[in-house]
Length: 224
Image (tube, rainbow, N blue to C red):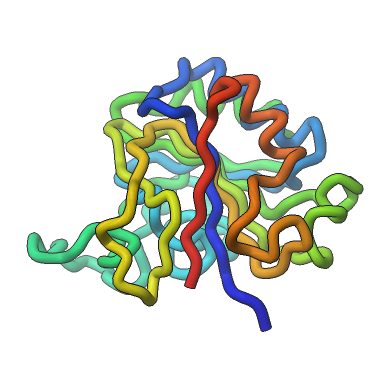
């Protein structure tokens, strides 16, 4: 069975990387075989707490492979205006709307695509298909090769709060959160490294993000 978990890594403060650094981070994740392409570049209104695979615009970009230029919206709430009384995600619904700006197989093509993106003015995400299970460091962490392990690099126009530890089916909305602007989120169901809940981040991933987020980078998980 297993429990779906969305894990994140972020700087300790809500820092927005310079666009060149954000691009290098995304490229290094592919170059160092942490993730596999294809990749997709999104810009618009994104939610850092939206479930990566299920209903989010990131999931649509990854699974549906729409043509470049397509405007994607959160599946559960197409065209709806957010209720001001909604709890914030992950305990309340996510409302996203973003355009697919570019996609491709070659990681280096992310760099020119980002240069043309509204970086800092709109929320940005680079979404990768899944973790690279041809990398022994990845397979040693996860229980088996699972191509549902989508990963997204976020660069948010404004800080959003990401829970450090949250059960989406529980009453944990008073738990600690971390404001983030740049962060990396990935989803998984089975992992030997921490059995999904209590352990640390994927070492191969954390080694790369620490180059950009610093030695005090923070990790957390949402599950349910």
